Image (cartoon, rainbow, N blue to C red; front, side, top):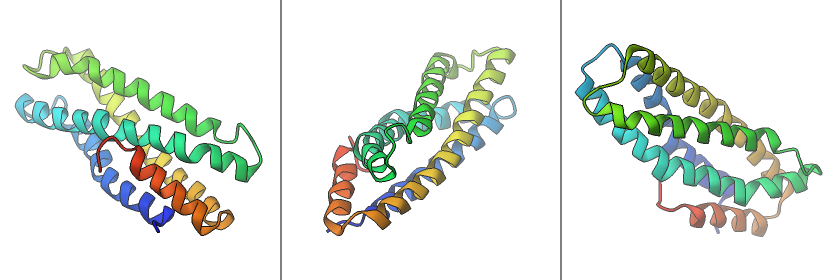
Length: 163
């Protein structure tokens, strides 16, 4: 039997170092050698699209409906879904800068926009992951062990690759 709380904590523990690297990367733009930025940018972008986005989608599919049912409100997770949409828009924005990253061909204005997108994604993710933990606490209190196990397995199996 898998623990819902432990499954989520494990995923978040693996996500947070990457979330924190977004802040490091943002601070590097315009201040360090572009080759160093490009390597880290590509590594973190690959993580975002290959791990973070699938994780968000898995959590939304697997948990949000259950949380709404427990809370008795069909729209109680609307703010979290809205944050997912905002994060996906920021990921798309980061994707547009990939063509500039190699060779560091972004302008000063584009560099500022890239930094803004990285800072925004970092801040939304930090708050969002903390909020997810609160909702998981609600599920832990209101579901039986079999239901929690089912959700934990849904999270683990919904991932395209293990974190």
